[in-house]
Amino acid sequence: MRRLSAVTIADILATGRACADAARPETLRYFRKAWTEADNKAGPGAFDPVTEADRAAERAMRAVLAQRRPDDGILGEEYGTSGGTTGLTWVLDPIDGTRGYLSGTPTWGVLISVADSHGPLFGIIDQPYIGERFEGGLGQASLTGPQGVSDLATRPPRPLGEAIVLTTFPEVGTEAEGRAFRAVAGRARLTRYGMDCYAYALVASGQVDLVIEAGLQTYDIHAPIAVVEAAGGIVTDWRGGPAIEGGQVIAAANPAIHAEALDILAGALSPGTR
Image (cartoon, rainbow, N blue to C red; front, side, top):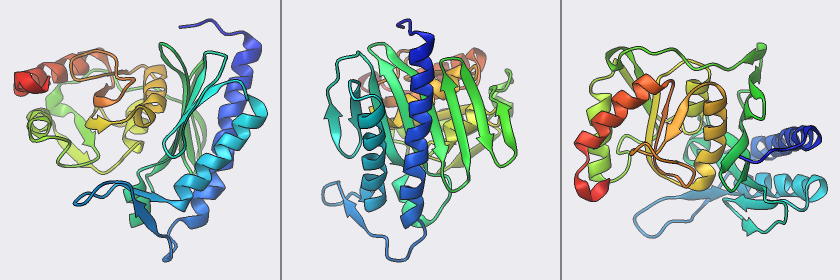
């Protein structure tokens, strides 16, 4: 991880918050409106929606970055990659959970992170409708919301049989990945679905023990990595390696339950899916 000056750190924190502030009204402008429409980015037989809210929120964040940090790179879900010269890249997911957004559920969020070649340095999980903002990295591990500001901290170890596990889609991924997930979930006390990025915020705030997902993209996971790890958790792929490129991801509240879940995942996966 690169060493950043205090001035640069302060500017990154302020810029990330400015991006979140700019995205909030753009997402809320279209939320729970009967006329909100979605285009399908997937092929026939699948549904990967994108709305004008997604596009407007990313444009708003890119405008902030163009003004405040024009020499940094950008990787955004809707408008792709823009090169930079500083070695830092902003990774933007303007609405993580567009399916939930279209359904009117409130747990979708805006994901913002800044990364170097080793991975995310700082991330924000912003929940515009709920009014909660989770920050992690560069000395930050905090939640700002309706009840004020509080520190983030993951929960201490407890056996998997007492744990809460979250994932977004019941099918998780491929048939083999779903089978591996169910091998873990079947031993947990409670499993819940449909949280999108809010699941990682709940790990960071000490509410749940594990999030296990598959088929993620880089922009889905960079901000959650920063927030969860700043709060004391661990985020890897299902083999225990880096998760910065997405794919199969496990976020755990602590190393003990991470190791327990990884062991079950490894035993359930066939060699061809590891």
